[in-house]
Length: 181
Image (cartoon, rainbow, N blue to C red; front, side, top):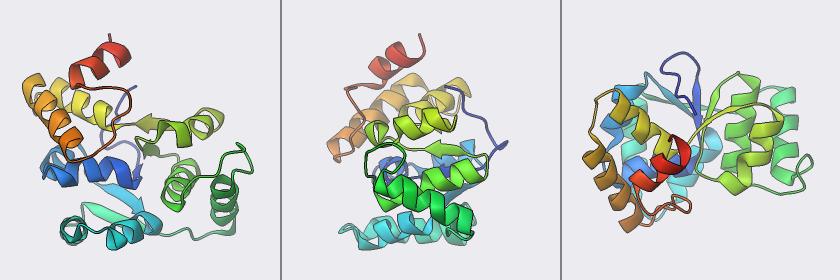
C-alpha cells in the first residue's frame, strides 16, 4: 500500500478521521496531506455522534480548508452511491458514509481512506481503488520522519483505548509486520 501525498484527492469515511480526532492528532494528517474530502453523509455522521467534540474539530478543520465536504452531485454518482449502499454489486449492504466515500473515490480517481475492510474490500478490488487505512497513514508518517515508530505505537494504543477498531491488529508493529514486511 502506497500513500500518494498530494497527488490524488483523498476521500475519507468516518472511521479513519475518528481515529485521529479522538486522540487529538489531526495535525499529523495536516502534515501529510494538503486536504481530505469527506462526503456530506460522513459530515452528518459526525453531527449525530454523541461526542460533540468531534464535530467541533471537524468544523475547525473545515474552516481551515483542510477538510472539504462534498455531496453526491451527478446522476452517475448518485446511481453508484445507491448501488454501493444497497449491495447491488457486492451482495453486501453498506452505510451511507462508506458508499459515498467509495463513490467519490471511484468517480474522481481518488484514494479511499477507510478502516472498514469487510465493507469496502470487494468494491476496492472491483474498481481498482487506491485505499489507505489508519495504519498506512501512521506508517507513512513514520517513513517521512514526521513521527517515530514509538509515537505511532502510542497513537495506535490510544486509538484502541478510545474504542477505535483497527482490525485484528493489537499494535502498530503488528500491522507493519503483516502489511509491509
